[in-house]
Image 1 (cartoon, rainbow, N blue to C red):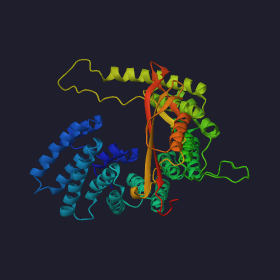
Image 2: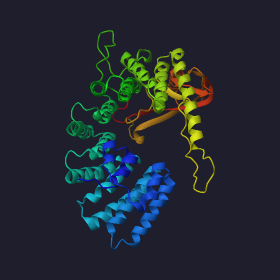
Image 3: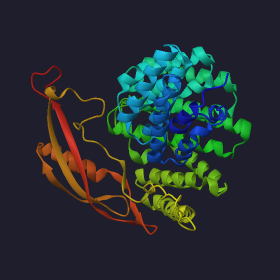
Image 4: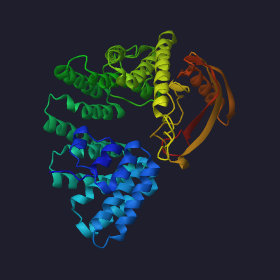
Length: 475
């Protein structure tokens, strides 16, 4: 069964699969201006074009009410692209109400506005509110297009992410498991087209601290590509990079004291008992990750220029790997190569974006995104013991909150120097811990004209929270 043409919008804005995009029908002539702006990601122009479509649809809403719902969905998607989530929520909500009134509460026409509403609410952090429309969209998708419609994958992904944010891990895992089954049913167990779905599933496991499962799934994804396309196919690059990413993510979790499932590491205590909440020594990142990045770089360097963006990112990731390990002598050559290639790509992009002659129809190119090496990035930070933890903060009325603000310089080698306290109301111990943590941190340095430079005036504000006396769980 043919999917509605509006599915293309979700494809563009929430990264639907290539197969789903290929199934979409031709874009209607009346919407050509809208689609042209969507293709250019000129969200303001796309919103203006969509608003014209909505105005025209309102004029004939009595005769064609579902056309109005469709136009409202187009408007919502453009507003979503512009990150105007309040306006997008309003447009999708009206679209849903219009379809319900004129098409029924089980109409397949509800699929697009329900998905758009769910994605929008999730993007604005309203995960609890996002779950009901997403679950409803999933039900309508399966009723309309079958249990194993590949188009449902993005709803499953967003449901897994939103449910995880709400702490409903068992519900989230149910959707993650179904994603794996869906990929097997649609593509077959040994098809490398499963890799994007497997990568999402692996990342979900990593995000909840299950690094054993995450690495096993990434390795399986690598194997699928190797068996079907060969060991040097570019499709193997992302899962290789992701394998390395699990090791740096596990290090980050350890600095926050988050318990993980990673029994691959040997016991660290003298009595042979492993304590997974201990901070990992950054000098001893898993060798598997380093080998994976080396292999990814070798594959990318043999590819045509179209792969250069990924090559820049992988060079930076390799530099970050050594920087975290306090091996800046190994990190800097990778950073320098990335900076040189990035400058070449930026120059080529600027030249291509400059029109040969200004015309009334010419539009200014979108502002370029900040380059990877144009500012310092913190890579490792051993957070103080009593520092505030994400997702583990008691209600404000149950805690005492204090802060320590530190100003410092990031050197060209990515180290911290000249750290000094510029404001604090914490205890002397907290002040000392905040200073110690920032001095032990590691940064990707800023690059100017292909060389690392020092960056002064950097700041870090550490918040310490302890339970108040007499509160359950306090001292």
